[in-house]
Each structure stands twice: as structure tokens, then as C-alpha cells.
Image 1 (tube, rainbow, N blue to C red):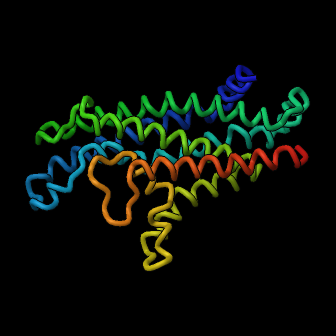
Image 2 (cartoon, one colour):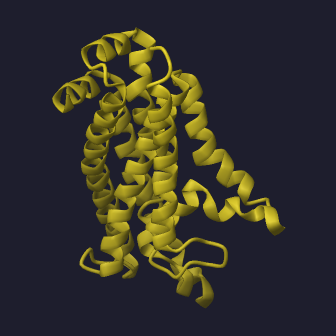
Image 3 (cartoon, one colour):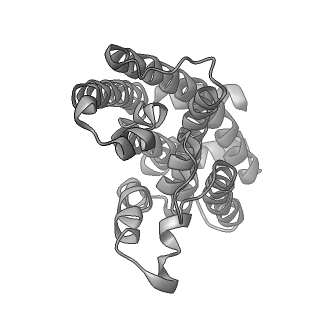
Length: 252
């Protein structure tokens, strides 16, 4: 089953294109941010210099590249519903929940490898852009290594979130819209909330991901790296759990 799911994942034509686009956006985004900050750094105030996180900056491109990983997760399941292939899959493997679990394992493993490579390259390229002002951080730095690993884990979470939503909604456009809303709209709206309704500013997915890639102490209201990891897990497990419940009860 795992080999079959791997074959189907590779057969989705948009998968390599999405990964290539994400790679380019993530790496170039980090490089442009690094060179721009390096140019302006001498004019910064002492406070701004002290607050600057050269590691977090390396992943500026992820703000846009992250959607590609969510889309890959959606298409891993929604493409089968669109083509009707899901009926054949369930006919061959009547244990539907096992099919979804296998998809999650294969997709998670693939994304972990690709995501960690992407985050490592983004980090190394961005640090080259900061070297001219001696702000570059070596990978051997413990906090930097944690952030690189955290960026890859965040991309895995986005992909599995997409898989869960794709299995629940079973429609590509609808599931992609849901991913877009959780990744971009909710964090944007959360920044304008205050008082007791401001909790989305701490518990949204981007805040969690940002906590994983930061090396500075969290500001007021921001999650810690450990809490960020927990939030990512919730965003993965809740949709997948609901999808596992529904896939065994609905017609293909």
C-alpha cells in the first residue's frame, strides 16, 4: 500500500511543479530579505539591531511558499475524488481508513525530506546575504539548527493539514480555499483583534510556525517554540481525525 501511494503521489503532475515553485520562492525570498536588511542594517537603531533575528529572516520566503505544500496535501487526495480513482482505491483496499493513513505516512515522509532540504538551503543562502555585515549565523549554532528543523516540520504540518481538509471537503478548490484561509486570512484578521477575542493571534498556524523558526525570546502574546509545535500538531491531528471518521461513513 505504501508503495502504491508513493506511485500515485508522484503521478500527480502538479506535485513537482509545486515543489519547484516553493523552492524558488522560499530561497529567493530569504536571499532578497537578507541582502536588503544587510544594506539597511548600518542605519538601524540600537533597539532594532538588538531585536533582529538573522535566522528567522532566512525563512521569509516561506510566508509565500507555504501555500504550495498545503496544495500538495490537498491534491494528494482530492485528485482521486476528481478523477473517480478513489473508487478503485477503495475497491482494492476496503479498509478506507488504512488508505488515508498510508497517504499521510507517505506524504509526511516525502514532505519532511523535501521540507528540511528546502529550509536548509534557504538558511544557508540567506546567511550568505548577511555575511557582508557580519550578521551570519553558523548552522552549528544550536538555535539555528532548531529553527531549520522547525521550518521543515512546519511544512510537514501544512501538507498534512491539506490532506485532512482535502479528505473532508473532497473538492480541490474548496479545500485549497480552506488552507488559504487558515494560513493567510486568519493570521491577518488576528492582528486586528484585541481583548478577550485576541486569542487567534497566538493560536493561528502562522504564529505557531513563526515560533518554530525564531531564535529570539517570544514577544508578548506569541507562542514559545514548544507551544508552536503543539499548535502545529493540533492543526494536523484534528482534520485528519475528522477525515478518518468521515471516510469510513461516506460513499466514495
